[in-house]
Structure formats: C-alpha cells, structure tokens
Length: 435
Image (cartoon, rainbow, N blue to C red; front, side, top):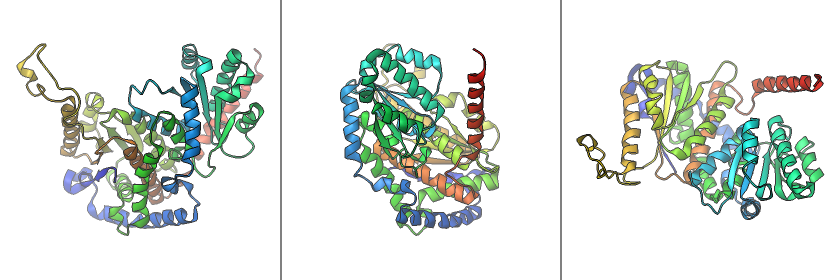
C-alpha cells in the first residue's frame, strides 16, 4: 500500500469521550460489507467504470500523444473547467513541485470566471504559444463555456479563426451539447468523457491524467497506487483490512455517536494543498444530503498551526482530524546559524529543515490526541504519483462506502442544480434588460 492508515486515536479508549466506542465502530464496520459487496458487483459488471480505471492502461498511449503535442507546441496551457473538472488534475499537477521543469508548459487552471484574473493572464502570455483544454462532462457548464468563448475570441483576434483547431482540445461526454457542436464547427480535437464517471470521481480518467502527463508525471504510477487500494476492496474478506471501509465506519460513527459535524484534512506536505480542496469537494458534494453529512475543512501544516490550531485544540469537540504526514526528517538544507548565533537556536542548530517539519507534524497529531480530539494519521513514505493515486482512490472509496452507511446517493448533487437554474435566470434577465 502506498500509505499507512493509523486510526487508533479515533477511539474512546485513546481520546476519551470525544472518541468512538469500539462497540459502535464494530457495528458500523460490519455494516460496510453490503457496500463492499456492491462495489465488487459493479466492478465485475462494469457498471461503475471508476472501479476499473486503476487497472486500465490501454488508454494511456493515445493520451500521451496528446500530452506530447501540448508539451511540444505550447508554452502556456489553459485548463478550463470547474469543480471536479479541475481540482483532480490540479492536485496531480502539484506533484511537479512549485518550480516545475522550465522545459514544460505552464498550466493555468481557470476555475472561476473572475474577469480581472482572465484579463491579467491573457495580457501576460503569447497567444501563438498557448493551448486550451476545455473540460465539461455535460458540455453545457456555463462557467466553462464562458471561459472557452473568451479564450477563443482572444486566440482568433490574434491568430485568425483558422488557427483555433490546432490550439484547442475539448473533453466532453458523447451526445448533443454546446461544447460538442462548437468543437465540430471549428474542428477541435474532441476526447470522450465517460458519461458514467462524474466529475469529482474523474481524476483517474483523462480528465485528471491529461494535465498530469503534460506536466511530465507518470500516469501509470498514479493508477498503480489506486490499484493497490482497489485490490484490497476486491479481495479481502476482513472489513478491518480494507482501509476505506475502516475510514468510512469511523467517519460515520463519529458523526452519529460523538456529535462530530466537521472533518478536517490536515496535510503537512505543500504538494497536497490542492488535494485537500479536491477532497473537500468529493466529501461535501457526495455526502451532504437529506440533512446528513459532515462539513469538510482543509488545514495546511505548518501554517495552520499558527492560525487554526488554537480552535482545534480548545474549541468545540465537534471535529475529526486526518493528519497526512510525509517522512521529511533528515531532508532539506541544514540550519546553519553562523551568520548570527543565539542560545535560543540550539534546538535548530545543525538540524535539517525537514527535521522541524517532522517535529511539527508529530506534535500537532499528539497534541490533538492529548486534548481528546479524534485523530487518524495517513503516512506516506514518498510523495509521488503512486502515493497520490492511492490517497485519491482511498478517499473516493471511503466516500462511496460512507454514503452507503448514511443512506444517500454518492453520485448526485440535486441541491446544486437549484443554484444553476437561478444563475441562468439572472443571465437571461440581464440579456433582456435595456443596455
């Protein structure tokens, strides 16, 4: 497995009244078996394609050809999309680090429709060296279509309409949609978004892997990590040996029995910043239905030790914590105090930067436990593609299993549609208003 899943500090025998009683946990863990059985059936019959993606490799050569063209032809690439069409790919691309290889294009994930941000971006780059990838499962997402039309008009004004086909790729499900028709009208390359894979579950598909491959990341390794997690679900009889089932039982148990209303994901790895936002959407949009669910929050170590930890330690006992740790000890530059030494620097002198990060992540987890807060630790031996694939598959499966325990559908988002309808009405009213 690409991670360890340490959960003992979620229970009352470790943290007191804020933790889950073992008997309640055992009952919920047993109740995950029907969900595991359903996942196995849906894997076998192919009705949930997400479950087969970890073992799939035959789609990667064609994706590599697209990625290679974008790497060769462009210095900047717009990835247009919002929510699940953006956060998964963005999370994977952060593995390339804060200063990626200068030979690679710069990826710009345009998730909002803030005109200031868009104008600032197009004013700073060369349209002749800019590619566009537009991602919308339905082909009708208003924000994505707005981003795309603004990008197309900018490109056409500089290069002519005839150049658009070379610069744009659309990822959209088959069928009659605005994005499909637009792509056909201008000859854009069009790649099929599987209609049975929702956006927030699409990171292991071309939606997440194409941007990652443009950034030089190993898509097969991402899926290898996910496959390790999936194999446990498919083969193990003991629910306690299936980490996503354990996580789901603990999360739902703490909500049902311990008044936990929020779940905090707390990575101590900068390259997991967007991953925390990806998880936040996955959990919120999948679980928050019919008055059920817990609110996901993202904190980042070490910065949030100095901004949120006071509340976490001394505020309401209503949160579960997932601290995601790497193994930074002994890594990074040595803290050399020769420029100005002081006795107060003794704990730092001669140590590595990673030693301090390790001390901080351990201290945060242990202090939360000492304060009676339920904490699980997910520990990564390496922060690489395989680890990221494993983490993402874990949380997708944990979410699906938790939804089963709560009796909600993990794949729809009915309440969100109300806002979309209202936004469309406002735009129609504006169109009818005198200018």
